[in-house]
Length: 539
Image 1 (cartoon, rainbow, N blue to C red):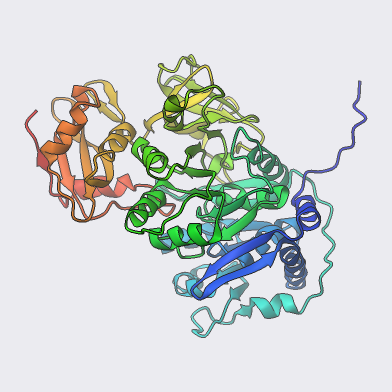
Image 2 (spheres, one colour; image 1 turned 180 degrees about the horizontal axis):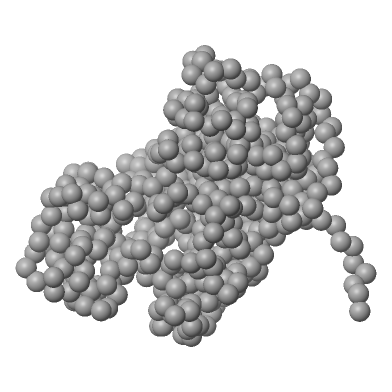
């Protein structure tokens, strides 16, 4: 029996039309060095139409790639809407990649046009002579350096066009956006999102069982728009009527505390390293005010339990974790406590990686690929599938990452009968000591609960007896003091005795990846080169 329901394609142009009409007066705020710029959804939609018309005049057609090398701001949002809706493919370029990686992804994607913020011209100029497919560079803001050669002024570019561009009819399974992994091992790998996958991901983001974005919200979008499409929030905003605050390059603790106090977001999305800096800044700011926030979403790496407790106990705000990856669009799990959980027990759920959201399936598997039980105790590798989960990489074979129709995530941990994930480690970071696993993630989170510790990262180092043992790399808070012995004593009451690190090093800062995660491969290289001053305690 055939259904008689209509079969309208799930495409981004439909989301634009909905936001422009239903939420016409909703506002996007862009923070600048001199103040805050504002534009309504209608104004942004009209400018997106002009951008699409201008790109078409420039020769951009269906499937052509248009790169963006930009901060979180209004113009970047206009490109988010215009490029895929006109049938081209938006390629968000990570501004923190090393030059050789940046050139690689531009060439691999075969970008024809790049839109760049004027403040980022010096970074793009480093690879200008290495990206032959790029025919035009459009600059948002004044370009007085000439470092990129001939460029096009963004405002002049779109100002020459009239509004009213007719969005073409597109196949919902056609490519809309491409985003590359951060390239922590080997070259970055490209993931191509379809209109359909973005539409469904946006719908999932409005669920109260996930992020729950709605027209009642104003979202401070700290997570970069080049990092998994800002966790999909730009599209969800037009879909749900959520206002956005775009912080551009002002991502340190002090300006973020000021944005929250003055612009009154109801929710904010960011990585744990940023939230750690926000807590540091707020501690020294008598005017810090987080009362507008109904929720704080942290993701990208494990959130220390102590951070969740600090937001709760000091400021009365709820923090939840979100789990996902470039390959999962990224929303896959959110750590919202189940209904009926006593308030004093909620922290136990918020400290987990997340609970599987409707629309995706999750399982854990053994080394041989056999499926393991969801009992909350058995440890295995997480595998995932669903309508916004990638089934392959762009132009690269990676059979080791896909298994029987499932994506192998590289995360190790447990999955319980309620769908809650607890991540022990990444496969490349897990510490194998005497044949047993030690979770670097849990050690890090526990060490960071010590009041003297600002950040901590744990890596495996070789050991003649046990194969591997943990090395704890610690950054102390300004003015704080703690010894390795003191920190190990602190751990002793909280983790298994055989987990306790003998090896400790105190460093000024922990190296970060291009998306703000601890870069453990750099720490491992520094250790191998003898660059870390390691203290070894008696066992």
